[in-house]
View 1 (cartoon, helix red, strand yellow):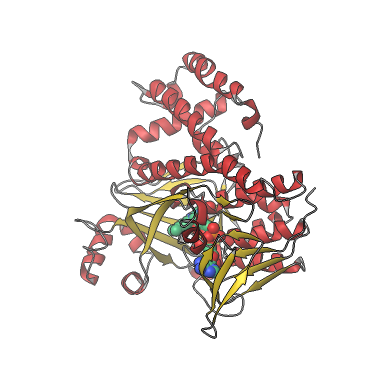
View 2 (cartoon, rainbow, N blue to C red; view 1 turned 30 degrees about the horizontal axis):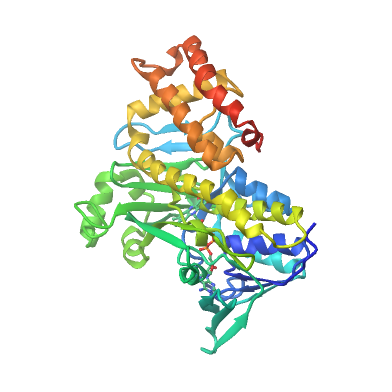
Amino acid sequence: MAENKDTVTVVGAGLVGSLVAVYLAKRGHDVEVLERRPDMRREVVDAGRSINLAISTRGLHALRQVGLEDEALRHAIPMRGRMIHPPQGALVFQPYGKDDSQHINSLSRAWLNQFLMTAAEATGKVRIRFKQRVTHADFSTGVLTVRDDATGEERREATRVLLGTDGSASAVRQGLEQVPGFAATQEQLGHGYKELTIPAGPGGAFQMEKHALHIWPRGTFMLIALPNEDGSFTCTLFLPWKGPVSFESLDSPARLEAFFAERFPDAKALIPDLTEAFFARPTGSMVTVKCAPWHVGDRALVLGDAAHAIVPFFGQGMNCGFEDCVVLDGLLAQRASWDGVFAEMTRLRKTNADAIADMAVENFIEMRDSTGNPRFLLEKAVEKVLLNAFPGEFVSRYTLVSFSRVPYRLAYEVGAIAGGIVSELADGLSRAEDVDLERAGRLIRSRLVPFMKEHADGFRAEG
Ligand code: FAD
């Protein structure tokens, strides 16, 4: 058990910072959280990126460990699959899992952040100080430079143990760049995003299928929509920054209206304020951040997006950050001090964070392009047949990432093997029902099952 009860300084009261504060408080630490924004429970503030987000098994498990899952699920809308809106023809529903029990959940980011801040404060051991912006972190001394955004005053604050959960543009990570041996890369995606709203219909009715993540795949760009509790949907348009169809080219109301009328006519009919919203709302950017090591001795650690920002196409950024909290807590449970805890975090988590970062980029291509493609639809259908016909033997990458806690690295590797099997079986098929189950069994037992046996420890981390 951790006997050392140092006060921990956490920079950033976003999703991960607030949750890690709950975990640390439950282990007996006093926690000081410095947050640059005002308190969003008292003042209207932009909750940051994306109005809603998808939480799945890893994130829910992290909430469950500290007794917060049930309340979160009361505010969540289950999404059982993707509802594809093709350019022409009928909608196609692709279930996410083997049955409805395997679903992801749409949750308001602002609600979740406020809920976690309140839960942290309710422990009696966490103090969140708002409008406190860290402008510099000096790891030779452990001193932070903090600007009070309310008064404009700047001060220096000493820390003993520091956690940087200040998001993808982390000031703490920038401080790490001065430490010899630290390296970071940032890759901006060539696409940006814009959020739009489909309001609720009469009486708060959902105007599209409520229990689905809607996707309009269109090759180099796409639109998605997630349901909200009040009957509305938040749509996110992903477009290249520049080029023939891009944020740059949609530079007038007339061009925008024509673009939506041609490419997303059904969505256009449901977004009454399309033009005002499109030109009034900011365009967001997306970045993949990889860095190492995540720590400086036993003094400081970055986690969440500060350590591993990823693009949002697997719906895993927050889920991965919440899993960081669980792993950190597990290490603290085993040790009497901070000695080696942060180094072990880097060792355990870095490879997994890199794996989900790469899978998220790959999923972007799948979502915007392949979900509308007949071959892709056939492979998804074959995958579903195999999931049902070979329970415990056949697993898919999506299932492992979203519905298990199997380390992301293993999910990545298994996904490549499983994907190869599906692709071979789909060759020459026109209907998934005709898949050769005998051959499938042979392929699964010769390629997939041995890999899973070899990594049996990782595959025990279900649910
Ligand atoms: P953040 O949420 O960015 O919080 C950082 C906090 O630190 C903020 O409160 C900020 O104000 C504060 N801060 C920043 N700098 C300073 C400073 N210098 N001093 C003090 N405070 C500071 N993930 C999912 O799991 N599922 C999804 O469906 C999903 N959808 C997404 C959709 C979009 C469009 C985007 C962009 C991301 C999505 N994500 C999703 C990813 C998810 O948003 C992030 O992984 C998650 O917010 C990371 O949480 P965090 O606490 O590490 O960082």
